[in-house]
Image 1 (spheres, rainbow, N blue to C red):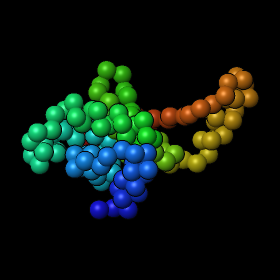
Image 2: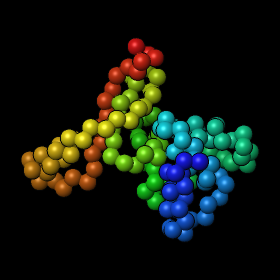
Image 3: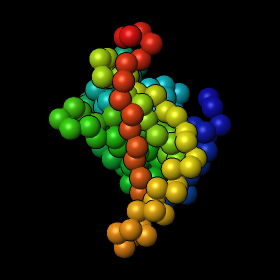
Image 4: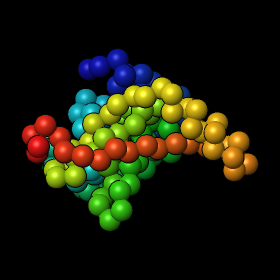
Length: 139
């Protein structure tokens, strides 16, 4: 089990959340997959080990992880949400053919927020940049 899973579980315990085997499995899957899965992906991957688990269980746990700041929900139009356990500052590049999402970092984007604040008077609370294209397999 990776250190980030261990760290996340410790963090949850401090907020008084009970660590059930299902929660542990969902979080571990999210951290280790890094593939930005949907709730259905998570359910399908874990269901063989947790026959009593429902899609609703997965959703409820994801919601709880999001509220505790451990998971980020990525929404794309009508498509179902995807979930990202990497809550550090990073951006996404998305394949327009197969829907694969990969992370990338580009540090100078912080300047965009500063520039936006200056020109609009807004207080910037967050930034999400997405690039679209074709992944290596789909090219």
